[in-house]
Length: 541
Image (cartoon, rainbow, N blue to C red; front, side, top):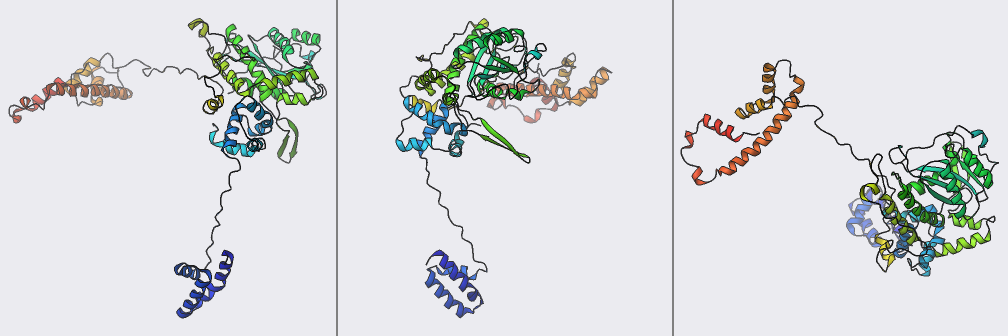
C-alpha cells in the first residue's frame, strides 16, 4: 500500500474510530494495523488525533553537476582574469580556457572542458561565493577658460561610435593626500567602439606632456586615432593641443562643464584599471615615472586581451523602473577582431600576440611591477625614497622572455597558482600616518607643590585628594579650584601605585616569614611603631 493510500484509509477510518466504544475501537484498530503495517502505538496516535498530521516530504539534495575538477579549474580561470564579475567571466571562458591549457595551467578532459565553458554566471557566483573576499581621490581638473569656443561640445552627430578610433581621454593624478608640488599623472585613453584602453604615464601635468603622450599612443595603438573627447581641464583646452589635432586630422571635442558623465567610458577605466592597479598613493620623480611606464606596458596587454567588458545596448523606462540591456561580455581584442573597418594586417598581428600571451605569467609580471612601483610611494613634504635610501632599481617588462624574479622557483606553476595567485590583490591606498597625541596638553598645576604633597602622603598615606586640595586652597588662596580635583586624584593614584610596589619590595627584602624575624612579643608593637614602619615603607620619590 502506498503512502497516499494509507492516508486516504486513515481519513476514512479515523472518524469512526473516535466515535466508537472500546470494543469497536479495538476491531477498527486491528483492521487498520493489518492493512497499513503500522505499529500499534503509532496507529493509535494517528486514529486518535483530530487532525491528520502532515508529513513533510524529505527532499533529497540534487547531485552536484559540477565536480571538484570543474570548480578548481574555474577558480584558476577566475584568478587569471583578475577576479572579474561572473557576467564578464562566463562568455570569456571560451577564450581564456584554451589559453590556460596552451600554457600548461589547466589539463582538462573533454567533459570537464565542456562543462567549464558552458557554465552560467549564476553558477559561477555560487561556486566562488566561499572564497570571495569581501576612494575617491582628489580632483585635479582645473577649467581652461580660454579657447572653449574653438572646441565644440560633443553631440550624437559628431562621432561614429561604431568605428574604432574615437577615444575619450582623461587625466588621473597620483598625488596621494596633497596637491602640492609636481607629481605623476596617467593619461587614460578609451576607445568607445571596442573598449581598447591605453594608459600613458606623464611626469607632470601640462599640455605638452599630453601631446607627447598622444604622439606615443598613436604609435602603439593598432588603429589610427580619429577623434578625442576630453573634459574642460587646462591640460586639454589649450592652443597647442588644438594645433596638434588639426595637424594630425583628429576630431577634437569636449564635454559640458561640470558634467562628469559625458566621459563615462574613460571614467570607468580610471577606477577599474588605474586606481585598482596603481592605487591612490603619491608618486613623483623620473625614476617613478619610468617604473610606472613599464607597468603600463604589461597592463595594456592584460586589459585589452584578458579583461572582457559589457556594453549597454539599450535602456528603457517602465514607470519608475529603468531596464538596461547589455551585450555579451567581450575583450577589446575580440570586439576589434569582429569590426569590419579594421585592417586585416592589424588583426593578424594581434592574433599572433594573443596566441603568445600567457595570462597567468602576465598577471604575475604585473604584480611584480606593482611591488617595484610601490617602493617609490612618497608622502608630501617628505624626501623621496631615492634621496633617503638610494635609488631603487628599475624593473622592465619583457614580453619575449620572463625574468626569473617574476616567477617562483617551482616547476609546477599551476600548483603554485592554487596557493598564491588565488589571493586577490586589492588596490593600494596607504593610510595616513597617525598624528602623535600628547596626553599632557597643559602644564601640571601641582608641579611646584608636589614635594609638599608627597611629604603629606608619606606621613599619612591614607589622606585623600579632596583633603589635600582643601589644604592647598587654604595655604595658597585663589590658586587652586575645585575643577582641578580630578587632576590631583590622578596624581595621587599614580603615587599610591608606586608606593605599593615599593612597599612590597621592602617586605620581600626583609623576608618577614623567616623564623628569626618573628622575635619578641607581638603585643609590644604599638600604633606609633606601625605608623613609623608604614612611613619608612611608603617613601616614594
